[in-house]
Image 1 (cartoon, helix red, strand yellow):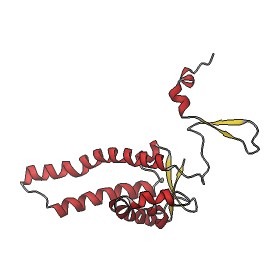
Image 2 (image 1 turned 60 degrees about the horizontal axis):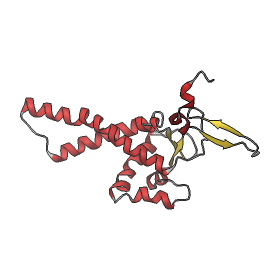
Image 3 (image 1 turned 90 degrees about the vertical axis):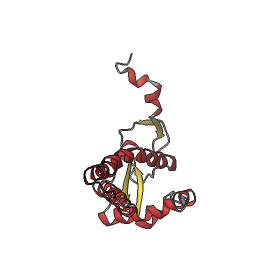
Length: 173
């Protein structure tokens, strides 16, 4: 009997997979903790799930860093921020969040959860300029009816359009 009962748990087993060895004979087991090949890209479904989870996490970040300050300013100074000021503040918070995380480790909070890492096309860590370019290119990619996301279906490497243009790629960790 196995001392670790959770290993027999079907939920735990769903996160493990088998892969063939290089000669095709036998198989070896990889778990979530084993590193994936750096050249192995992350699937489209995994990236979309990560984006959805990122949206949920950002609701909390934006509540703390956008809504609370403006409510306090309105309550104490009896002034409301104009829409352009609110939009600029929103954009600045997102810019700092994404560029910081991508250029310092290559992962946002949601990307860590989904084991996705942002790297340059050469496999090296993303530089700040690349992270900024990816952030700026992601906006039209998403706003124009998600054309940059749909691009991944037709791209030979399954990259989003903003990743292709910024010289970055998302890989499994």
